[in-house]
Length: 629
Image (cartoon, rainbow, N blue to C red; front, side, top):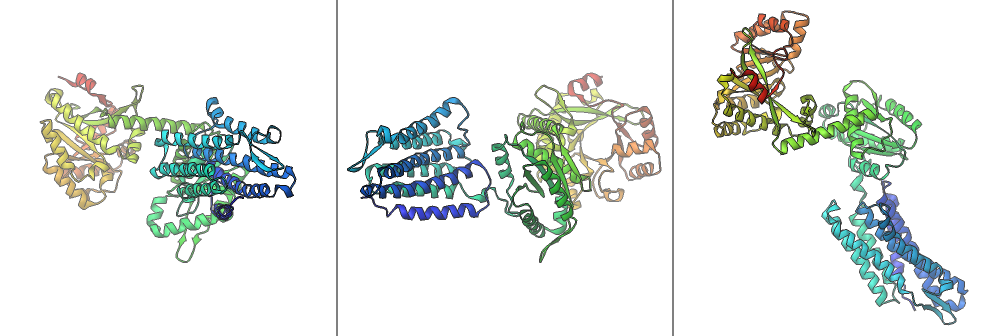
């Protein structure tokens, strides 16, 4: 006589789990598909366990075939249950069961063999028999238990040996918990066969999985209630073989727009956009990847153009609720090439960079992403790696570009410039790695190395013999905001026993944002004995009257102003130079590329000249060889 008191409540709990699963928004990925299959299999197992147990009790009133079939169904799905617990474990470890022949055999052969024995039971009588005395276990009955045990132990071994692949510690312990619950349940099934306890322990294991691994919020963005960046990365990684069409749109100038409307109102607006997208395109995969970027993954190409047209029309009107009224412009990027050979990170990076370009065009733009975009992204990844290596290995190089006297063209100074190399030893252009360094925070490390290596150069070389009076070193905005900057520079010049007057620090005009912070920092640096130069004048918001509050001794006119004046002379630049000279500043003109430009800058009163006409930036050894007297 079997005890059903544990099985029926377990069946009710399963019903609640199934309702919960289908009630929530789920990403179509392996772990979710495996979990719902596991729920359905468990439902069949418990139902068939109850039915087959009842059939065995009432065998005399039923056809023998009914007893055979009900028990065979139970054993078939019992084995499938063990196998899919194993598959779920592989999913959380991101293992591919078909990765190689050995793994495929190890994973599938025990199930196939045992299922074959079960299905052949009416003829082989291996698992059980049904005769005049009812249901009787046969000689191979425990093969069912051993197969289930095989998958549990296999799973435990994988979890322990691959624990480093778990993203969170709680997931590692959660996996061990549900596998040990299954192990206990299987043990009790052997010890207490009349009680249907195994089903209860399987439900406990499923509940553990649901709590630890099946929280859909892992892949849901809080503001829009769309799938998030982690979700699209995982989806693309799993479905790389499927043909999809991907396009994205971005809220133009998202950061500035957020500042205008305020973060609270912008968050509410994102919620309105998410609601609209779910209402209008609810059957499609949509992702929100932060900073106003939305990505669609659709099944056929005509949908792309249709959705884009619909979105353009919708964003012509504001998004309005009780306390929100947002007027937004959007731009689009769409992938038009076969992206199967690229990683999800590459796809998302290319989409982000393309959306940034589209948004900067200041109109509603649709930009196409082709293979060239991915090639450029790959180059940027290599530059990032080179940048990381250079900053971590302290292998940033300095090149020196001469600064000459405007009247005599004799060398008087130099600018120390940052350079890094790729794996092949080739120079990476500064306009390629500097923006990346600024965006990922490595610009400070670059600047610090340039300053220190300039100190080393001054210590190891006779500047007078080279004709050098000083060397300019650029300060990035990130460096300039460091509160102990002056003290760190003083420490280095003391360490290398050099005079601070030998180093002129260049601060870009764009760094002048907060005048109080600016003046305080400059005064500290000036007190340490460094001379200060304002770099790239003409690209920011400063003016001549504003500069008199800061202790600069030199102003470098940006090359764009120089080139414009040389192409079309006017009174603006000569007047500006005259004003600066009268205010006590020396003037450096950069970007000099011809003899005529040099003569023109000398004529309007510039003190120093710098540019390719005199010399490109040179490696230290070449600079020394060229200018050593």
